[in-house]
Length: 114
Image (tube, rainbow, N blue to C red):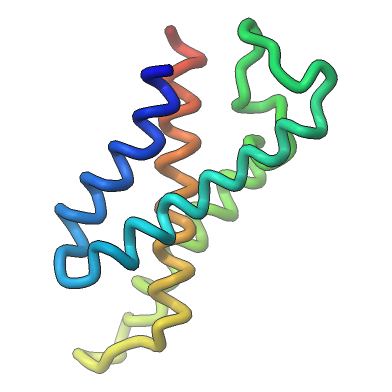
């Protein structure tokens, strides 16, 4: 139960700490990334307390995590050489989606070492 609570507490704290001016939007996007757990529906059995998500479920694999890291970093790469002009909101949304998915994988990864 504590693990599930962390999937809401950590994004909330991240949204407040790093996206204060738009923390509500950031929090909603970060929470929406919890839908990545829908890939658990593909497992048989659907829930196994002894099974670890990382490396088992399709959206919890290394290639998927690399894609999430790319989503997170795209706005930073797009900004190189652009000066102070603002990026389109879709890039910041992609950044938040990547961040939310990386947070999710990190929290699930903690379960793998405990």
